[in-house]
Length: 638
Image 1 (cartoon, helix red, strand yellow):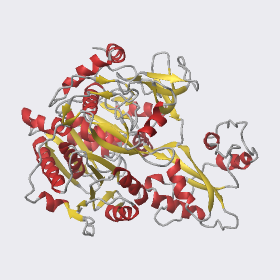
Image 2 (cartoon, rainbow, N blue to C red; image 1 turned 90 degrees about the vertical axis):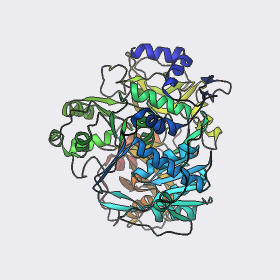
Image 3 (spheres, rainbow, N blue to C red; image 1 turned 135 degrees about the vertical axis):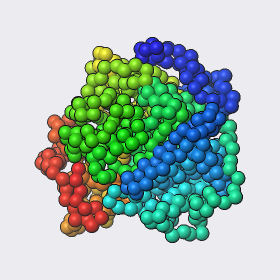
Image 4 (tube, helix red, strand yellow; image 1 turned 180 degrees about the horizontal axis):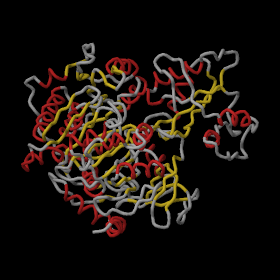
Protein backbone atom coordinates (compact mmCIF):
# COMPACT_ATOMS: atom_id res chain seq x y z
CA UNK A 1 0.00 0.00 0.00
CA UNK A 2 1.62 3.25 -1.15
CA UNK A 3 0.67 6.89 -0.95
CA UNK A 4 0.14 7.09 -4.70
CA UNK A 5 -2.15 4.06 -4.88
CA UNK A 6 -4.23 5.23 -1.91
CA UNK A 7 -4.51 8.76 -3.23
CA UNK A 8 -5.59 7.63 -6.69
CA UNK A 9 -8.23 5.31 -5.25
CA UNK A 10 -9.61 8.09 -3.02
CA UNK A 11 -10.00 10.50 -5.94
CA UNK A 12 -11.18 8.04 -8.62
CA UNK A 13 -13.44 5.91 -6.41
CA UNK A 14 -14.07 7.76 -3.14
CA UNK A 15 -16.96 5.49 -2.23
CA UNK A 16 -14.74 2.41 -2.27
CA UNK A 17 -11.97 4.19 -0.38
CA UNK A 18 -14.11 5.59 2.43
CA UNK A 19 -16.26 2.47 2.71
CA UNK A 20 -13.07 0.64 3.57
CA UNK A 21 -11.95 3.32 6.04
CA UNK A 22 -15.35 3.21 7.77
CA UNK A 23 -14.66 -0.35 8.93
CA UNK A 24 -12.32 1.05 11.60
CA UNK A 25 -15.40 2.47 13.36
CA UNK A 26 -18.03 0.45 15.22
CA UNK A 27 -21.50 1.26 13.97
CA UNK A 28 -24.84 0.66 15.67
CA UNK A 29 -26.11 0.40 12.10
CA UNK A 30 -23.47 0.28 9.35
CA UNK A 31 -24.12 2.72 6.50
CA UNK A 32 -25.46 1.33 3.25
CA UNK A 33 -25.07 4.72 1.52
CA UNK A 34 -21.47 5.90 1.71
CA UNK A 35 -21.91 9.17 -0.21
CA UNK A 36 -25.15 11.03 -0.82
CA UNK A 37 -24.80 13.53 -3.67
CA UNK A 38 -28.48 14.34 -4.14
CA UNK A 39 -28.11 17.70 -2.39
CA UNK A 40 -24.83 18.70 -4.07
CA UNK A 41 -22.86 20.81 -3.44
CA UNK A 42 -23.87 19.91 0.14
CA UNK A 43 -22.69 16.31 0.12
CA UNK A 44 -23.30 13.93 3.03
CA UNK A 45 -21.23 10.93 4.06
CA UNK A 46 -22.56 7.67 5.56
CA UNK A 47 -26.10 8.96 5.23
CA UNK A 48 -27.98 6.09 6.89
CA UNK A 49 -25.29 5.03 9.35
CA UNK A 50 -25.91 5.15 13.11
CA UNK A 51 -23.18 5.31 15.77
CA UNK A 52 -22.02 7.04 18.93
CA UNK A 53 -18.71 8.90 18.94
CA UNK A 54 -18.19 8.57 22.70
CA UNK A 55 -18.72 4.80 22.49
CA UNK A 56 -16.06 4.58 19.80
CA UNK A 57 -13.65 6.75 21.81
CA UNK A 58 -14.13 5.05 25.19
CA UNK A 59 -16.56 2.19 25.79
CA UNK A 60 -15.48 -0.12 23.01
CA UNK A 61 -11.86 -0.05 24.25
CA UNK A 62 -13.01 -0.98 27.75
CA UNK A 63 -15.17 -3.78 26.33
CA UNK A 64 -12.14 -5.04 24.38
CA UNK A 65 -10.17 -5.40 27.62
CA UNK A 66 -8.16 -2.18 27.45
CA UNK A 67 -9.82 -0.53 30.44
CA UNK A 68 -6.56 -0.45 32.48
CA UNK A 69 -4.68 1.35 29.66
CA UNK A 70 -4.04 5.07 30.10
CA UNK A 71 -6.41 7.15 28.00
CA UNK A 72 -5.64 10.65 29.27
CA UNK A 73 -2.61 12.07 31.08
CA UNK A 74 -3.07 15.52 32.59
CA UNK A 75 0.29 17.26 32.94
CA UNK A 76 0.17 20.81 34.32
CA UNK A 77 3.52 22.46 35.02
CA UNK A 78 1.71 25.73 35.79
CA UNK A 79 0.01 24.10 38.79
CA UNK A 80 2.60 21.42 39.50
CA UNK A 81 0.02 18.66 39.17
CA UNK A 82 -0.27 15.45 37.16
CA UNK A 83 -2.94 12.81 36.92
CA UNK A 84 -3.60 9.81 34.70
CA UNK A 85 -7.00 8.45 33.71
CA UNK A 86 -7.40 4.93 32.37
CA UNK A 87 -9.97 4.18 29.71
CA UNK A 88 -12.17 2.63 32.40
CA UNK A 89 -11.87 5.70 34.66
CA UNK A 90 -12.49 8.18 31.88
CA UNK A 91 -15.53 6.21 30.75
CA UNK A 92 -16.97 6.25 34.26
CA UNK A 93 -16.44 10.01 34.67
CA UNK A 94 -17.88 10.74 31.25
CA UNK A 95 -20.97 8.62 31.82
CA UNK A 96 -21.54 10.38 35.14
CA UNK A 97 -21.28 13.88 33.70
CA UNK A 98 -23.48 12.83 30.79
CA UNK A 99 -26.05 11.93 33.42
CA UNK A 100 -25.55 15.34 35.04
CA UNK A 101 -26.24 17.07 31.72
CA UNK A 102 -29.40 15.04 31.31
CA UNK A 103 -30.42 15.94 34.84
CA UNK A 104 -30.01 19.62 33.86
CA UNK A 105 -32.36 19.14 30.93
CA UNK A 106 -29.89 18.62 28.08
CA UNK A 107 -31.20 16.31 25.41
CA UNK A 108 -30.15 15.04 22.00
CA UNK A 109 -29.43 17.94 19.66
CA UNK A 110 -29.25 20.54 22.45
CA UNK A 111 -26.16 22.71 22.58
CA UNK A 112 -23.72 22.91 25.49
CA UNK A 113 -21.14 25.70 25.47
CA UNK A 114 -17.81 25.05 27.19
CA UNK A 115 -15.68 28.00 28.32
CA UNK A 116 -12.87 26.03 29.87
CA UNK A 117 -9.12 25.82 30.48
CA UNK A 118 -6.88 22.82 29.82
CA UNK A 119 -8.16 20.56 32.58
CA UNK A 120 -9.53 16.99 32.52
CA UNK A 121 -13.07 18.18 33.18
CA UNK A 122 -13.04 19.84 29.75
CA UNK A 123 -12.38 16.53 28.00
CA UNK A 124 -15.00 14.82 30.16
CA UNK A 125 -17.58 17.46 29.25
CA UNK A 126 -16.89 17.16 25.51
CA UNK A 127 -17.19 13.39 25.55
CA UNK A 128 -20.28 13.55 27.78
CA UNK A 129 -22.04 15.71 25.20
CA UNK A 130 -21.15 13.21 22.49
CA UNK A 131 -22.41 10.41 24.71
CA UNK A 132 -25.99 11.73 24.86
CA UNK A 133 -26.10 13.23 21.37
CA UNK A 134 -25.79 16.83 22.54
CA UNK A 135 -23.77 19.32 20.48
CA UNK A 136 -20.82 20.94 22.24
CA UNK A 137 -19.28 24.27 21.37
CA UNK A 138 -15.93 24.90 23.03
CA UNK A 139 -14.87 28.55 23.26
CA UNK A 140 -11.21 29.32 23.87
CA UNK A 141 -10.76 30.71 27.38
CA UNK A 142 -8.80 33.71 26.13
CA UNK A 143 -11.82 35.32 24.48
CA UNK A 144 -13.25 38.40 26.15
CA UNK A 145 -16.88 38.87 27.16
CA UNK A 146 -18.20 40.43 23.89
CA UNK A 147 -16.74 37.60 21.79
CA UNK A 148 -18.11 35.01 24.17
CA UNK A 149 -21.53 36.69 24.14
CA UNK A 150 -21.65 36.53 20.33
CA UNK A 151 -21.07 32.78 20.45
CA UNK A 152 -23.68 32.28 23.17
CA UNK A 153 -26.27 34.10 21.08
CA UNK A 154 -25.41 32.10 17.97
CA UNK A 155 -25.29 28.62 19.54
CA UNK A 156 -28.08 29.22 22.10
CA UNK A 157 -26.77 26.65 24.59
CA UNK A 158 -29.07 25.06 27.12
CA UNK A 159 -26.17 24.74 29.60
CA UNK A 160 -22.76 26.39 29.90
CA UNK A 161 -19.83 24.60 31.52
CA UNK A 162 -17.01 26.78 32.80
CA UNK A 163 -14.24 26.90 35.38
CA UNK A 164 -13.42 29.48 38.00
CA UNK A 165 -10.17 30.35 36.25
CA UNK A 166 -7.47 29.53 33.78
CA UNK A 167 -3.86 29.45 34.92
CA UNK A 168 -0.93 30.76 32.92
CA UNK A 169 2.76 30.82 33.87
CA UNK A 170 2.61 34.37 35.24
CA UNK A 171 -1.03 35.08 35.97
CA UNK A 172 -4.47 33.74 36.76
CA UNK A 173 -7.35 34.51 34.37
CA UNK A 174 -10.70 34.56 36.14
CA UNK A 175 -13.24 32.99 33.77
CA UNK A 176 -16.37 33.36 35.85
CA UNK A 177 -16.48 37.20 35.80
CA UNK A 178 -15.92 37.09 32.03
CA UNK A 179 -18.77 34.63 31.62
CA UNK A 180 -21.06 36.73 33.82
CA UNK A 181 -20.27 39.82 31.74
CA UNK A 182 -20.91 37.87 28.54
CA UNK A 183 -24.30 36.69 29.80
CA UNK A 184 -25.19 40.29 30.65
CA UNK A 185 -24.42 41.21 27.03
CA UNK A 186 -26.05 38.18 25.41
CA UNK A 187 -29.69 37.99 24.42
CA UNK A 188 -29.83 34.23 25.04
CA UNK A 189 -29.98 32.97 28.63
CA UNK A 190 -28.90 29.38 29.35
CA UNK A 191 -30.76 27.40 31.98
CA UNK A 192 -27.67 26.69 34.07
CA UNK A 193 -23.93 27.27 34.32
CA UNK A 194 -21.87 24.40 35.71
CA UNK A 195 -18.73 25.72 37.41
CA UNK A 196 -15.53 23.77 38.06
CA UNK A 197 -13.96 25.42 41.10
CA UNK A 198 -10.16 25.49 40.92
CA UNK A 199 -8.35 25.85 44.27
CA UNK A 200 -6.13 28.75 43.18
CA UNK A 201 -9.12 31.01 42.50
CA UNK A 202 -12.63 30.00 43.47
CA UNK A 203 -15.51 31.85 41.84
CA UNK A 204 -18.46 33.56 43.47
CA UNK A 205 -21.59 31.61 42.56
CA UNK A 206 -24.96 33.01 41.52
CA UNK A 207 -28.44 31.48 41.50
CA UNK A 208 -27.83 30.34 37.93
CA UNK A 209 -24.65 28.44 38.85
CA UNK A 210 -24.22 24.86 40.03
CA UNK A 211 -21.02 23.29 41.34
CA UNK A 212 -19.40 20.59 39.16
CA UNK A 213 -17.98 18.59 42.04
CA UNK A 214 -21.23 18.56 43.98
CA UNK A 215 -23.11 17.32 40.91
CA UNK A 216 -20.53 14.60 40.24
CA UNK A 217 -20.76 13.44 43.86
CA UNK A 218 -24.57 13.34 43.80
CA UNK A 219 -26.82 10.35 43.25
CA UNK A 220 -27.54 11.29 39.61
CA UNK A 221 -27.54 8.19 37.41
CA UNK A 222 -24.81 7.84 34.75
CA UNK A 223 -26.01 8.01 31.15
CA UNK A 224 -25.58 5.37 28.49
CA UNK A 225 -24.47 6.10 24.93
CA UNK A 226 -27.23 7.36 22.64
CA UNK A 227 -27.04 6.16 19.01
CA UNK A 228 -27.22 9.10 16.61
CA UNK A 229 -27.31 9.48 12.85
CA UNK A 230 -23.91 9.76 11.20
CA UNK A 231 -25.03 13.11 9.78
CA UNK A 232 -26.12 14.51 13.15
CA UNK A 233 -23.85 17.31 14.43
CA UNK A 234 -21.17 16.43 16.97
CA UNK A 235 -19.94 19.95 17.64
CA UNK A 236 -19.88 23.58 16.61
CA UNK A 237 -16.49 25.30 16.57
CA UNK A 238 -16.35 29.01 15.91
CA UNK A 239 -13.71 30.44 13.64
CA UNK A 240 -13.12 34.02 12.60
CA UNK A 241 -14.65 35.37 9.42
CA UNK A 242 -13.62 38.43 7.46
CA UNK A 243 -16.74 40.30 8.60
CA UNK A 244 -15.86 39.92 12.27
CA UNK A 245 -18.96 37.79 12.86
CA UNK A 246 -17.93 34.35 14.13
CA UNK A 247 -18.65 31.36 11.92
CA UNK A 248 -19.87 28.21 13.64
CA UNK A 249 -18.27 25.34 11.73
CA UNK A 250 -20.43 22.22 12.07
CA UNK A 251 -18.87 18.75 12.26
CA UNK A 252 -20.92 15.59 11.95
CA UNK A 253 -20.49 12.35 13.90
CA UNK A 254 -19.91 9.69 11.25
CA UNK A 255 -17.54 11.37 8.84
CA UNK A 256 -15.59 12.88 11.73
CA UNK A 257 -14.94 9.51 13.38
CA UNK A 258 -13.93 7.82 10.13
CA UNK A 259 -11.60 10.61 8.98
CA UNK A 260 -9.86 11.06 12.33
CA UNK A 261 -9.29 7.34 12.77
CA UNK A 262 -7.81 7.16 9.26
CA UNK A 263 -5.55 10.16 9.86
CA UNK A 264 -4.26 8.87 13.21
CA UNK A 265 -3.00 5.68 11.61
CA UNK A 266 -1.87 6.99 8.24
CA UNK A 267 -0.67 10.54 8.90
CA UNK A 268 0.46 10.54 12.53
CA UNK A 269 1.48 6.87 12.74
CA UNK A 270 -0.30 6.50 16.09
CA UNK A 271 -2.18 3.39 17.16
CA UNK A 272 -3.36 1.54 20.29
CA UNK A 273 -1.12 2.15 23.30
CA UNK A 274 0.97 4.89 21.64
CA UNK A 275 1.35 8.21 23.45
CA UNK A 276 0.74 11.52 21.68
CA UNK A 277 1.44 15.03 22.95
CA UNK A 278 -0.55 17.67 21.10
CA UNK A 279 0.49 21.01 22.56
CA UNK A 280 -2.50 23.11 21.63
CA UNK A 281 -5.72 24.16 23.35
CA UNK A 282 -9.01 22.29 23.25
CA UNK A 283 -10.64 25.59 22.22
CA UNK A 284 -9.03 25.26 18.79
CA UNK A 285 -9.52 22.67 16.09
CA UNK A 286 -6.17 21.00 16.76
CA UNK A 287 -7.28 20.34 20.32
CA UNK A 288 -10.63 18.95 19.23
CA UNK A 289 -9.13 16.61 16.65
CA UNK A 290 -5.80 15.55 18.12
CA UNK A 291 -5.98 16.08 21.88
CA UNK A 292 -9.45 14.66 22.41
CA UNK A 293 -11.09 12.67 19.64
CA UNK A 294 -8.36 11.36 17.35
CA UNK A 295 -6.13 9.58 19.88
CA UNK A 296 -9.06 8.13 21.83
CA UNK A 297 -10.76 6.80 18.70
CA UNK A 298 -7.73 4.59 18.02
CA UNK A 299 -7.08 3.55 21.63
CA UNK A 300 -3.97 5.69 22.11
CA UNK A 301 -2.93 7.76 25.14
CA UNK A 302 -3.34 11.51 24.82
CA UNK A 303 -1.61 14.14 26.95
CA UNK A 304 -3.51 17.19 28.14
CA UNK A 305 -0.71 19.70 28.70
CA UNK A 306 -1.45 22.90 30.62
CA UNK A 307 1.56 25.11 30.04
CA UNK A 308 3.85 26.75 27.50
CA UNK A 309 6.78 25.37 25.50
CA UNK A 310 9.19 27.84 27.13
CA UNK A 311 9.19 29.11 30.70
CA UNK A 312 7.20 26.36 32.42
CA UNK A 313 9.77 26.06 33.84
CA UNK A 314 12.27 26.33 30.98
CA UNK A 315 12.93 25.40 27.34
CA UNK A 316 12.99 21.71 28.26
CA UNK A 317 9.28 21.61 29.12
CA UNK A 318 8.20 19.53 26.10
CA UNK A 319 11.16 17.18 26.32
CA UNK A 320 10.54 16.45 30.01
CA UNK A 321 7.03 15.34 29.01
CA UNK A 322 8.40 13.20 26.17
CA UNK A 323 10.83 11.44 28.50
CA UNK A 324 8.43 10.99 31.40
CA UNK A 325 5.49 9.66 29.38
CA UNK A 326 7.41 7.99 26.52
CA UNK A 327 5.78 10.12 23.85
CA UNK A 328 5.88 8.82 20.29
CA UNK A 329 4.65 11.95 18.45
CA UNK A 330 4.52 15.65 19.29
CA UNK A 331 2.17 18.03 17.49
CA UNK A 332 2.58 21.76 18.03
CA UNK A 333 2.71 25.06 16.15
CA UNK A 334 5.77 26.52 14.40
CA UNK A 335 5.54 29.41 16.88
CA UNK A 336 6.48 27.03 19.69
CA UNK A 337 9.49 25.77 17.77
CA UNK A 338 10.59 29.32 16.95
CA UNK A 339 10.36 30.15 20.65
CA UNK A 340 12.55 27.15 21.45
CA UNK A 341 14.98 28.15 18.72
CA UNK A 342 15.28 31.63 20.20
CA UNK A 343 15.65 30.40 23.79
CA UNK A 344 17.65 27.22 23.26
CA UNK A 345 19.44 27.65 19.90
CA UNK A 346 21.94 24.83 20.46
CA UNK A 347 19.39 22.35 21.80
CA UNK A 348 20.99 22.19 25.24
CA UNK A 349 17.70 21.59 27.05
CA UNK A 350 16.64 18.99 24.50
CA UNK A 351 19.82 17.01 25.10
CA UNK A 352 19.14 16.80 28.84
CA UNK A 353 16.28 14.35 28.32
CA UNK A 354 15.86 10.85 26.96
CA UNK A 355 13.70 11.42 23.90
CA UNK A 356 14.40 8.07 22.27
CA UNK A 357 10.66 7.28 22.18
CA UNK A 358 9.98 10.27 19.90
CA UNK A 359 9.55 9.39 16.22
CA UNK A 360 7.77 12.41 14.76
CA UNK A 361 7.35 16.14 15.28
CA UNK A 362 4.27 17.52 13.51
CA UNK A 363 3.86 21.24 12.95
CA UNK A 364 0.75 23.09 11.72
CA UNK A 365 -1.39 26.14 12.29
CA UNK A 366 0.75 28.57 10.31
CA UNK A 367 3.49 28.49 7.70
CA UNK A 368 6.68 26.72 8.73
CA UNK A 369 9.58 28.70 7.32
CA UNK A 370 12.51 26.69 5.90
CA UNK A 371 15.00 28.05 8.46
CA UNK A 372 12.94 26.79 11.38
CA UNK A 373 12.30 23.47 9.63
CA UNK A 374 16.02 22.93 9.03
CA UNK A 375 16.90 23.91 12.61
CA UNK A 376 14.31 21.54 14.09
CA UNK A 377 15.41 18.66 11.87
CA UNK A 378 19.04 19.13 12.89
CA UNK A 379 18.53 19.71 16.61
CA UNK A 380 15.81 17.16 17.35
CA UNK A 381 16.98 14.42 14.97
CA UNK A 382 13.44 13.18 14.26
CA UNK A 383 11.14 13.37 11.27
CA UNK A 384 9.71 16.91 11.16
CA UNK A 385 6.40 17.14 9.31
CA UNK A 386 4.92 20.43 8.19
CA UNK A 387 1.28 19.94 7.32
CA UNK A 388 -1.64 22.15 6.42
CA UNK A 389 -5.34 22.16 7.21
CA UNK A 390 -8.11 24.37 8.54
CA UNK A 391 -10.76 24.59 11.22
CA UNK A 392 -13.20 23.95 8.41
CA UNK A 393 -11.59 20.71 7.26
CA UNK A 394 -11.02 19.25 10.73
CA UNK A 395 -8.06 17.11 9.64
CA UNK A 396 -5.04 17.61 7.35
CA UNK A 397 -5.41 18.55 3.70
CA UNK A 398 -1.72 18.09 2.91
CA UNK A 399 0.98 16.27 4.84
CA UNK A 400 3.73 13.73 4.65
CA UNK A 401 1.73 10.57 5.49
CA UNK A 402 4.15 9.07 8.00
CA UNK A 403 2.00 6.06 8.84
CA UNK A 404 1.35 5.23 5.20
CA UNK A 405 4.62 6.05 3.47
CA UNK A 406 7.30 8.53 4.49
CA UNK A 407 8.02 10.68 1.47
CA UNK A 408 10.98 13.01 0.95
CA UNK A 409 10.43 16.39 2.63
CA UNK A 410 10.78 19.80 1.03
CA UNK A 411 11.38 22.77 3.35
CA UNK A 412 8.64 25.34 2.87
CA UNK A 413 6.12 22.79 1.61
CA UNK A 414 3.27 21.10 3.48
CA UNK A 415 4.08 18.02 1.37
CA UNK A 416 1.40 16.27 -0.68
CA UNK A 417 -2.41 16.33 -0.75
CA UNK A 418 -3.82 13.54 1.39
CA UNK A 419 -6.28 10.93 0.15
CA UNK A 420 -9.72 12.46 -0.17
CA UNK A 421 -8.50 15.92 -1.07
CA UNK A 422 -8.36 16.77 -4.78
CA UNK A 423 -6.24 19.94 -4.58
CA UNK A 424 -6.14 22.30 -7.55
CA UNK A 425 -4.68 25.76 -8.08
CA UNK A 426 -7.08 28.10 -9.88
CA UNK A 427 -6.67 31.51 -11.41
CA UNK A 428 -9.19 34.33 -11.01
CA UNK A 429 -11.28 32.89 -13.85
CA UNK A 430 -11.47 29.45 -12.26
CA UNK A 431 -9.08 27.83 -14.72
CA UNK A 432 -6.60 25.28 -13.42
CA UNK A 433 -2.99 26.40 -13.31
CA UNK A 434 0.02 24.26 -14.08
CA UNK A 435 2.94 23.35 -11.85
CA UNK A 436 4.76 26.20 -10.07
CA UNK A 437 2.04 28.76 -10.90
CA UNK A 438 0.60 30.59 -7.92
CA UNK A 439 -3.14 30.93 -7.49
CA UNK A 440 -6.06 30.15 -5.20
CA UNK A 441 -5.84 26.77 -3.47
CA UNK A 442 -9.16 25.00 -4.03
CA UNK A 443 -10.51 21.54 -3.27
CA UNK A 444 -12.63 19.75 -5.82
CA UNK A 445 -15.97 18.61 -4.45
CA UNK A 446 -17.02 16.47 -2.77
CA UNK A 447 -14.88 17.17 0.26
CA UNK A 448 -13.90 14.01 2.13
CA UNK A 449 -15.57 12.83 5.35
CA UNK A 450 -14.80 14.79 8.51
CA UNK A 451 -14.86 18.20 6.88
CA UNK A 452 -17.45 20.84 7.70
CA UNK A 453 -21.04 20.13 6.79
CA UNK A 454 -21.99 23.80 6.97
CA UNK A 455 -22.11 26.94 9.10
CA UNK A 456 -24.38 26.73 12.14
CA UNK A 457 -27.72 28.33 11.35
CA UNK A 458 -26.45 29.91 8.12
CA UNK A 459 -26.32 27.55 5.15
CA UNK A 460 -26.26 30.49 2.74
CA UNK A 461 -23.09 31.82 4.35
CA UNK A 462 -21.38 28.49 3.81
CA UNK A 463 -22.38 28.33 0.16
CA UNK A 464 -21.58 31.97 -0.54
CA UNK A 465 -18.31 32.00 1.36
CA UNK A 466 -16.82 28.68 0.24
CA UNK A 467 -18.65 27.14 -2.73
CA UNK A 468 -19.92 29.87 -5.05
CA UNK A 469 -16.63 31.50 -6.07
CA UNK A 470 -15.58 28.51 -8.18
CA UNK A 471 -18.50 26.13 -8.85
CA UNK A 472 -17.54 22.53 -8.13
CA UNK A 473 -14.80 23.59 -5.72
CA UNK A 474 -14.32 24.52 -2.09
CA UNK A 475 -12.39 27.79 -1.74
CA UNK A 476 -9.79 27.46 1.01
CA UNK A 477 -9.01 31.18 1.13
CA UNK A 478 -5.28 30.45 0.89
CA UNK A 479 -2.97 31.04 -2.02
CA UNK A 480 -0.09 28.88 -3.17
CA UNK A 481 1.12 26.46 -5.81
CA UNK A 482 1.81 22.81 -6.57
CA UNK A 483 5.30 22.02 -7.81
CA UNK A 484 6.17 19.47 -10.50
CA UNK A 485 6.36 16.68 -7.93
CA UNK A 486 2.87 17.44 -6.63
CA UNK A 487 4.08 19.08 -3.43
CA UNK A 488 1.90 21.91 -2.11
CA UNK A 489 3.36 25.26 -1.07
CA UNK A 490 0.93 27.41 0.94
CA UNK A 491 1.87 31.09 0.78
CA UNK A 492 -0.77 32.74 2.95
CA UNK A 493 -4.33 33.95 3.29
CA UNK A 494 -6.08 35.63 0.44
CA UNK A 495 -8.59 37.36 2.73
CA UNK A 496 -8.21 39.56 5.77
CA UNK A 497 -7.88 36.90 8.43
CA UNK A 498 -4.59 36.98 10.31
CA UNK A 499 -2.79 33.94 11.64
CA UNK A 500 -1.26 34.92 14.98
CA UNK A 501 0.76 32.08 16.49
CA UNK A 502 -1.63 29.57 14.93
CA UNK A 503 -4.76 31.45 16.05
CA UNK A 504 -6.94 32.82 13.28
CA UNK A 505 -8.10 36.34 14.07
CA UNK A 506 -10.34 38.48 11.94
CA UNK A 507 -9.19 42.02 11.28
CA UNK A 508 -12.88 42.94 11.42
CA UNK A 509 -13.32 41.95 15.06
CA UNK A 510 -10.25 43.92 16.14
CA UNK A 511 -11.27 46.92 14.05
CA UNK A 512 -14.70 46.87 15.66
CA UNK A 513 -13.11 47.19 19.09
CA UNK A 514 -10.82 50.03 17.99
CA UNK A 515 -13.64 51.89 16.27
CA UNK A 516 -15.53 52.03 19.55
CA UNK A 517 -12.97 54.48 20.94
CA UNK A 518 -14.45 58.01 20.88
CA UNK A 519 -11.35 59.49 19.24
CA UNK A 520 -11.26 57.05 16.30
CA UNK A 521 -12.77 58.06 12.98
CA UNK A 522 -11.69 54.95 11.06
CA UNK A 523 -9.06 52.28 11.26
CA UNK A 524 -7.48 49.34 9.50
CA UNK A 525 -5.83 46.32 11.09
CA UNK A 526 -3.35 44.34 9.07
CA UNK A 527 -1.16 41.36 9.78
CA UNK A 528 2.54 42.18 9.99
CA UNK A 529 5.06 39.41 9.49
CA UNK A 530 6.70 38.31 12.71
CA UNK A 531 9.63 35.89 13.10
CA UNK A 532 8.07 34.22 16.13
CA UNK A 533 4.28 34.33 15.72
CA UNK A 534 4.02 34.30 11.94
CA UNK A 535 1.85 37.42 11.99
CA UNK A 536 0.94 40.06 14.57
CA UNK A 537 -1.87 42.62 14.27
CA UNK A 538 -0.88 46.22 13.55
CA UNK A 539 -3.40 49.05 13.63
CA UNK A 540 -3.59 52.20 11.51
CA UNK A 541 -5.89 54.75 13.10
CA UNK A 542 -7.35 57.97 11.73
CA UNK A 543 -8.57 60.20 14.55
CA UNK A 544 -11.48 62.58 14.64
CA UNK A 545 -10.69 66.24 14.22
CA UNK A 546 -9.82 68.01 17.47
CA UNK A 547 -9.13 64.92 19.56
CA UNK A 548 -5.94 64.80 21.59
CA UNK A 549 -3.90 61.73 20.67
CA UNK A 550 -1.87 61.71 23.90
CA UNK A 551 -2.07 58.20 25.34
CA UNK A 552 -4.32 57.03 22.50
CA UNK A 553 -2.15 54.07 21.54
CA UNK A 554 -2.17 52.72 25.09
CA UNK A 555 -5.93 53.19 25.37
CA UNK A 556 -6.49 51.29 22.14
CA UNK A 557 -4.21 48.47 23.20
CA UNK A 558 -6.17 48.11 26.43
CA UNK A 559 -9.49 48.32 24.58
CA UNK A 560 -8.58 45.51 22.18
CA UNK A 561 -7.36 43.32 25.01
CA UNK A 562 -10.59 43.87 26.94
CA UNK A 563 -13.02 43.39 24.05
CA UNK A 564 -11.32 40.74 21.95
CA UNK A 565 -8.82 39.08 24.27
CA UNK A 566 -5.13 38.87 25.02
CA UNK A 567 -4.43 36.82 21.90
CA UNK A 568 -5.30 39.90 19.81
CA UNK A 569 -2.58 42.06 21.39
CA UNK A 570 -1.47 44.63 18.83
CA UNK A 571 2.16 44.91 17.88
CA UNK A 572 1.77 48.63 17.27
CA UNK A 573 -0.76 51.41 16.84
CA UNK A 574 0.02 54.16 14.31
CA UNK A 575 -2.01 57.35 14.10
CA UNK A 576 -2.13 58.32 10.42
CA UNK A 577 -3.65 61.12 8.36
CA UNK A 578 -5.67 58.83 6.08
CA UNK A 579 -6.08 55.34 4.68
CA UNK A 580 -5.68 54.34 1.03
CA UNK A 581 -9.05 53.58 -0.55
CA UNK A 582 -10.64 52.88 -3.86
CA UNK A 583 -13.09 55.37 -5.23
CA UNK A 584 -15.89 53.19 -3.92
CA UNK A 585 -14.47 53.51 -0.39
CA UNK A 586 -12.84 50.09 -0.03
CA UNK A 587 -9.61 50.13 2.00
CA UNK A 588 -6.68 48.74 0.01
CA UNK A 589 -5.65 46.08 2.50
CA UNK A 590 -3.42 44.13 0.16
CA UNK A 591 -1.44 47.28 -0.55
CA UNK A 592 -1.11 47.96 3.17
CA UNK A 593 0.12 44.42 3.82
CA UNK A 594 2.71 44.78 1.10
CA UNK A 595 3.95 48.07 2.57
CA UNK A 596 4.16 46.77 6.13
CA UNK A 597 6.09 43.70 4.94
CA UNK A 598 8.54 45.86 2.98
CA UNK A 599 7.40 44.68 -0.44
CA UNK A 600 6.80 46.69 -3.57
CA UNK A 601 3.20 47.82 -3.31
CA UNK A 602 0.77 47.13 -6.12
CA UNK A 603 -1.32 50.28 -6.45
CA UNK A 604 -4.60 49.76 -8.31
CA UNK A 605 -5.85 52.30 -10.78
CA UNK A 606 -9.00 52.69 -8.72
CA UNK A 607 -7.15 54.36 -5.83
CA UNK A 608 -8.81 57.60 -4.74
CA UNK A 609 -5.73 59.48 -3.49
CA UNK A 610 -2.32 57.98 -4.17
CA UNK A 611 -0.71 60.69 -2.05
CA UNK A 612 -1.91 58.92 1.10
CA UNK A 613 0.63 56.18 0.40
CA UNK A 614 3.55 58.60 0.67
CA UNK A 615 2.99 59.10 4.38
CA UNK A 616 2.08 55.49 5.02
CA UNK A 617 5.14 54.18 3.20
CA UNK A 618 7.42 55.86 5.73
CA UNK A 619 5.33 54.85 8.75
CA UNK A 620 4.86 51.23 7.74
CA UNK A 621 8.50 50.79 6.85
CA UNK A 622 9.22 51.33 10.56
CA UNK A 623 8.77 47.89 12.07
CA UNK A 624 10.11 48.64 15.54
CA UNK A 625 7.89 47.38 18.39
CA UNK A 626 5.47 49.68 20.12
CA UNK A 627 6.12 50.20 23.81
CA UNK A 628 3.07 50.66 25.97
CA UNK A 629 2.65 51.97 29.47
CA UNK A 630 -0.75 50.30 29.82
CA UNK A 631 -0.53 48.61 33.25
CA UNK A 632 -2.05 45.24 32.36
CA UNK A 633 -0.47 45.10 28.93
CA UNK A 634 3.15 45.76 29.83
CA UNK A 635 5.59 46.19 26.98
CA UNK A 636 4.06 44.95 23.76
CA UNK A 637 6.55 43.10 21.60
CA UNK A 638 5.83 41.57 18.23
